[in-house]
Image 1 (cartoon, rainbow, N blue to C red):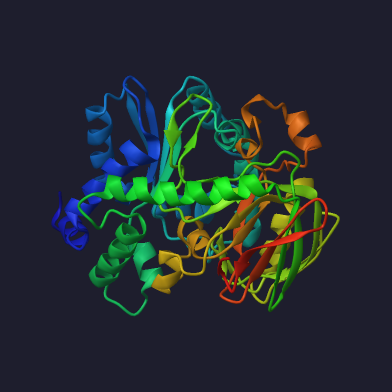
Image 2: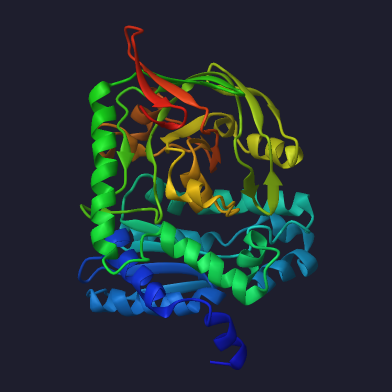
Amino acid sequence: MTAHQRHLSAPIDPVKLDRLAEVAVKVGLQLKEGQDLLLTAPAVALPLVRRIAEHAYKAGAGIVTPILSDEEATLTRYRFGHDASFDRAAGWLYEGMAKAFSDNTARLAIVGDNPMLLSGEDPQKVARASKANSKAYQPALEKIVNFDTNWNIIAYPSASWAKLVFPDDAEDVAVAKLADAIFSASRVDNDDAIGAWNKHNAVLRERTEWLNGQRFSALHYTGPNIDLTIGLADGHEWEGGASTAKNGITCNANIPTEEVFTTPHCRRVSGRVVSSKPLSYQGTLIDNIAVRFEEGRIVEAKASRGEEVLNKVLDTDEGARRLGEVALVPHSSPISKSGLLFYNTLFDENAACHIALGQCYSKCFIDGTKLTPQQIAAQGGNKSLIHIDWMIGSDQTDIDGVRADGSRVPVFRKGEWA
């Protein structure tokens, strides 16, 4: 380890970092003996990668395969890569990942790159590369969204990300602050992190059981800048916290998580809504997203910042203008209370109620593991190359559950569970 590496790692509490790795393996994945693990991470997250490998092998992992990315290498492509290369992606890699997931390999992703890394690059190249990557990734993505295997996402406090969240602090101070925020949100800032997750999962399970018992046909949102009715898919099922994958393993896909979520009916959304928090997407900050839905489809879209990128996203494919997820998060969630904008969906989506454009999750249907893609589509599930969450909730948002007979039940009042 170089002196520079020691300096950068010093602000990150090694005990809590090790605890995060243990929680990722034992709670996030619930990795089983003999199961292989595919791990992707930014190169700067090596300290966490090594701890995860250790906990995975102690848990009896078969083979742990890390794949690392690097910010400088990514930027080099945009500055020196041939123009035609931006319409291509490493399909062979994603085909291999899809095969691994089919063979019961677990999936762990560590996020930590600078969310605004590509903000200074040619937006046309960024959009082309993103679309090519989305198409190539589809075989592997389908295994994840269909919950074929156990998977998990966690975060590492890189210096470039930390300076974006805390621009007025020295680098080591910013890293320390972001590390503390990640550890707190991930519930590893106490001695019994696994126990804390068991309690949290129980609370989320109570919420999903209540919602599933109500069998709402739609949710109606009202408040400043929102009058939106989101029809729910036929046979939808609410999920939250720990869920069981098709391979029979119960895992927490996101750490942290504060949401309960389900599949909306992609043809039964109407009304208007303005985002309550900015969306960081592919190096662009998209702010004040204002859209209008008719018959499930976005027919008008504006943004005070990043509108050009927003419209490119909406034109990705037919499903990009329709919803694939609706999620409920109380305004009093720990991430909301932190007051931080993380510029990262893993955290920011857990600060407010949100919706997602694009691909739905098949697990959010009753007996979803047994449904064919055609049956999912017939019940209102959406299909797309993208899945992009953005926040619409605030402390002034009211939500009513609407039953098939038109009767209403309060679900949220002023941003909190009613």
